Structures are given as structure tokens and as C-alpha cells.
Amino acid sequence: PDVNSYGWWMDEKQKAESRKKKLKDLELLGNYFEDARAYSQKENQTPKNLNFESMRGLFDGTKNLYIRADNAKAIMDAVRFARNYQVQSIVIRGGKEVYVVKDFLKENDIPVILSKMHSNPSREEDDIDIVYRQPAILKEAGVTFCIGYDRGHDGQRNLGFVAGSAKAYGLAYEDAITAITYSPAKIVGIEKEYGSLEEGKSATLFLSTGDALDMLGNQVTHAFIDGRNVDLNDKQKELARKYGEKYGIEE
Image (cartoon, rainbow, N blue to C red; front, side, top):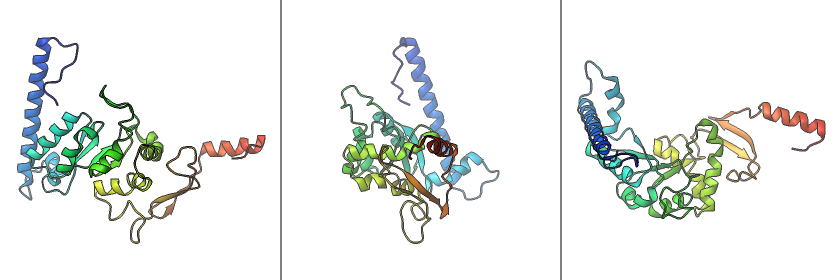
């Protein structure tokens, strides 16, 4: 947390209390990471601390530390904090202001999961479309990124359309596809099995009669997970067919 950020409603006493609490929280968090790192240096600990066991891979690069941060300063502070405790692999999730710190991210080899593309900029001085242009900006800067969606499981249906927005605002079509297929697989470390159509990889894909990145043209006809054909029928489609036949409406 930014120890010097305060709510507009706070008086001087409340600001001082807020800063004191944030400093204390940072100290506790730092102690926790230090203890976890020390714990990980011994292979077989007795008794086992399950929390620290789950953090072992953070200090040898076999696991990612995912940090939710949007503000540019918060992103930089979080990366520096994690690196101070020898965390090897850091991923920023959210990243609404990553365009401000793109050079910092490139220099520190920090990948980003963009999950707030369909939102307004957070800075008054920024262009209204800056958040939509972030994928193209990160691509040009050489920052590894993928596109996510921040509205829960029911919003995942819009993931392709978010990639379509990135394409409309400067990202090449193939790069937009990569941002929702291979790039996320690479960031989470499963690119050897998923993310692209190659021999030996999982047959997880879908087919569309229209442009999958265009909400007007998109029409998914088939989907496969690990080679298994997924039944795409549902109640809404059954009702559409039922009343389409009744009233002579073509699909």
C-alpha cells in the first residue's frame, strides 16, 4: 500500500493513523515473506507450515507471484517489494496504468495480465482511449502480456471481444489472438501443453463461422477440450429453435 495516500475525507489525525497502520501492515507482510523464504531453504521441514509450503516455488522461480495492482506507483512498489525478498517470477494482474511504467516492466521482465481494458482511464490528463490502446503500447515496448477479463466467470464470454477492442486500437490481429491463447499459457507456465495448435499439444480449441473477435460476426459452432467435443446446446438455443420454427424465424 502507498503509505502516503489518504482519503479526501481524512483530517490530519486520521491521516497519521492511516500511515501508521499501513507501515505496520508492510512490516508484517515483509516479516511473513522473510519467514517463508527462510522456511523454503530447508527441503523437509518438521513440523510443516502449509502456508509456507505453498510459497516454496516463489523463491526459486518455479511459481509465479501474482500481484493485483492498477496504479502505476503501486505496481512499481509491489515489484520492488517482492524483489527485495528474492521472489523470482512476478506477474501483475489488473494493470490499468501499466502504460505509465512500461519501461520499468520491460527492464524487470514483468509480464502483465490486462483485466480492465473495458474501463475508463484513471488519470484526468489521459486520452479517453488509453486503456484500449494498452495492448498495442505494451507490444511496442516489448512487455510480455495477455488479455484477461475482470468480471467473473459469466464475463468470460466477452474475452474474445476484449481482444477485438485491442485490435481496433492498434494491436495486430495475430497479436490479439495470441494475447488470449498462447500468451496466457506462457505466463502461467503451461505453454508446452496449451495455447497453440501444434502436434503433441492438447486439442483445446473452438470453431466459429465468423470472426471470433467480433461480437456481430462471432458464431461458435464447435468446441473441444483436450480433444473432447463439447455439447454447446443449452436451454436458450432450444427455445430459439422452438419459437423460430413456430414463427418462421431463421437463425
